[in-house]
Amino acid sequence: MFGSQMARRTLLGGGLAVGAAAALAGCRTDGGGGTGTGGDSGGGDVSSIRPNYIPYDGPQPDLPGDGAIGVPNGFLSYPSPPPSTGGVPVGLSKPVEMMVQGVASATPHSKNQWWQMWDKDLGAELSVNVVDSTQYTAKFQTATAGGTFAEITQIVTVPQLPKLLESMFTDLTPYLSGDNIAKYPNLAAHPADAWDMCIINGKIWGITNPRIVAGTVGMTRGDILEEKGIDLIPELNSGEDFLDLCREITDRKAGTFAIGQIPQNWTIPLIMESLGGANVWQVDNGTWISQYETPEYERALEIVTQMYDEGLFHPNSYSDLSSTAVWFDGGATAIFAQNFASWQTRAGTDAKPYDYPCGVVKMPKWDGGGVAEKHLGAPGYGAPVGLAKTDDEARIDELLKVADYFASPFGTEEFLKVNYGVEGRQYNLKDGQVRPVADVTDERIPGPAYYGATNAVNIYSPGSQEATELLHAYCQEMIPTGVRNPSYGKFSDTAASKGAAADKKLNDIQGDIIQGRAKLSEWADAVKEWKSAAGDAVAREYAEQE
Image 1 (tube, rainbow, N blue to C red):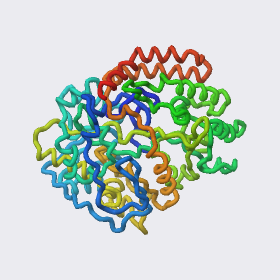
Image 2 (cartoon, one colour):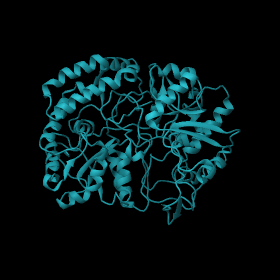
Image 3 (cartoon, rainbow, N blue to C red):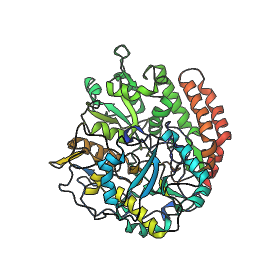
Image 4 (cartoon, one colour):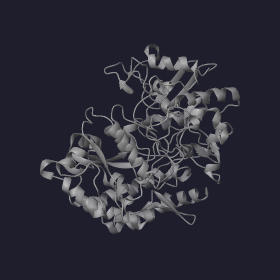
């Protein structure tokens, strides 16, 4: 995939990862690493390939952002009645098939009013082959072997991906780069960096589901903090303040712990921000250096080992991976690191199990001096959706208009159709707020959102102005000065073929060090082994793309 994210945080680099969860609030699409693609692996400046950013001329946000640098718009209400984009019906000349990750719809097409509404807007039937993310790579490789891709297919990272793209997918550069994107105004309104997830060898190969780049955030249980007299967003002036916060909210007798996650995957990235460390990779005078090689990473490993020894982590953090969210939502832990979308979900609703105030930790510079620079996440989902190879320009135009439909901007009638369903059936628009209908038949069609939908690129919390303002203010403060992972927009064949095994071994030794089964002094040799197995080759392959 382009710009990958595995379930684990500390991966090799670049792109998205096979097996990322489809549910926004639960998947990692920000942070570090993976076996991904994207970018100009043939050399050159990715920005010269990108489509131009053209803001959509529609409903104005209450809290303006800046799509050119990734700051999202914030909306306090929804226009009523909402205007149409004017892009429907799309006018498909024949039915179209799509193969994407996700979970099959609970309601078949013949009974699914939401799906049938899409067909009407598109002008022909949309057939969606949805494959579980854990099985998608195998399905994709089977399609590769048979040369039988659906017209619209989600692309995942496999070895020799650039050659595969050239032989089996349509180069979209002539249709989307620069001012060409203006023909598809909804896609043109995507944040500029989102296109980096779709570019390899100087060509655009797909369309991503753009995301807010706020990265991994340490959410807080505001009610637990309030009992201790601590603010929803604690004021922290140093790394020692962060440690003191964790100590203060840990009450082992009461069964409450600061954190309940695998430390190296979720807490070390936050500590690396405080230490001013690399966001997975850093580039010094053309030399690519992994975070693992840096003194900051070894220091972060030492700090987290101390925290684990102090009992600040839930005792089952390594053994019960399925309960991390349950612990936080149930009040057994008070800090929970996840992608920004998870904070949007929890801060923007008071429905169970999220019926608690949810804040965030702004990591301080470890030695003091203000808030640390934020490590930014991926600007889009790492597995872009491309078009099977065709020379039929009229059909390419039709299929891009399908993406433009799914990319309908917030505030429009079509955005509601794509993301909320049929008015009066799945939702009602009342008093300027979108209100989902309770206990309605589940007609969601997971998967098509990957084809450019803007469901994850704005901030809107129906009925909660305070939450929208809180989230937007955080993005305004943290994103403009944030640190980008330089491997976004890059492809490494070594990462795709050897990265997972090498990274797992390095991850395992970190776990052993943290849990006291190995010494910190063993870390340097483990990094050398990782570099020899894959890391050095990945660094070379990234450097060749500069």
